[in-house]
Length: 210
Length: 210
DNA sequence: TTGAGAAAATGACTCACAGTCATAATACTT
DNA sequence: AAGTATTATGACTGTGAGTCATTTTCTCAA
Image 1 (spheres, each protein chain N blue to C red):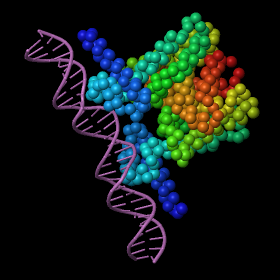
Image 2: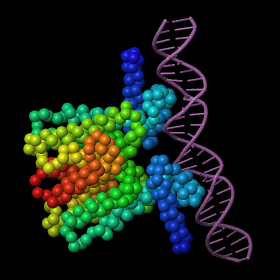
Image 3: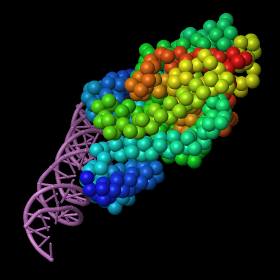
Image 4: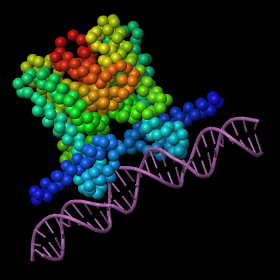
């Protein structure tokens, strides 16, 4: 219960995550080793395993930061005064900023999206990052509902369902842009921005309805 | 130049890919080893490396089959007589069938979508699978154009751009369904089909325009 | 048919890395 | 200051990708 001890523990925990971000982000998680993280953190490898049960668990800590950062930016950008539709436009814009300004965090979310590393065998304390992700979806759903009430968004959408669909669609398009733009550009004369803008236009179009 | 020799070579190549599908699909690529593939194929490990330069290269051969299968099913399902819009609906349905009937191939495409393993250092003979993927996008673009000509699809979309966006969106939604449905169902009362149906409805809505 | 040279196949080996654990260092308590 | 608990360590183990010296199989000219 010694608070100072807990503080030291928390600090070391965060320091390890800091080191992991440096290493994973610079070489990619697959090419980065725990030895490198340990060295970066100035610790022995064994120590890492006192704080994280596996390399994936360490990665999940980064994922948590990614979701938390995104959620915070959403919350900061929202304006209660605005219509639901306007706020939806806002979070789309914020999301795009996040994509450009925190590419590594965005990448972490992408990587998570493609993995099944959330076998329900995972202890519940290790699922905090999930709650952050779900909170983002729910935020979107709330905005859609609000927009339906104030008349700025069509009424025939189930809010939570639509929020998931938009999330999935947007992740898909941004994934395409992030990972495959070289191919797209090679085979057709298209720029990343064109695809992104088009996608956002379509979502706005769908939100408004006829 | 000995044709019989080439045939034997091709057969062995395909046999290795068959073995790799069995092993990779049953354990997941990350948990499958080249030794296991070799054993499944009844060959020594070294032999695999005469046919494929790496585990990833072997995986790309599977990816090629995945794209080729999908493309074939698209082509079989299309009906020249129909409007562009009807044919777009058709390929969306075919795609969904593919998702359900060839989950492993679908998964391979997903995995590809999330990886950068297409460093442009890749020899061009190893890029055939890419051409298959691009062909699918172009097929979609053609249908959109046709629909614009016959009036069944709105005119203010750039066909190729829209094809990429729809592809990205659809991959994103299906990825969400395939990888994260357990979470979605846990936090909200939603079924995979609801999300998929909603997504397809939205695409159709967007294609038609106001 | 044979045997020499080419082509294909092999599996023991190397190297890199995740995760473990017996031991060492440090911190806390009285 | 001694004893106990906590935290840290890095040598070690196991696994798997990829290599390569050696062996086996094929080819074809004589």
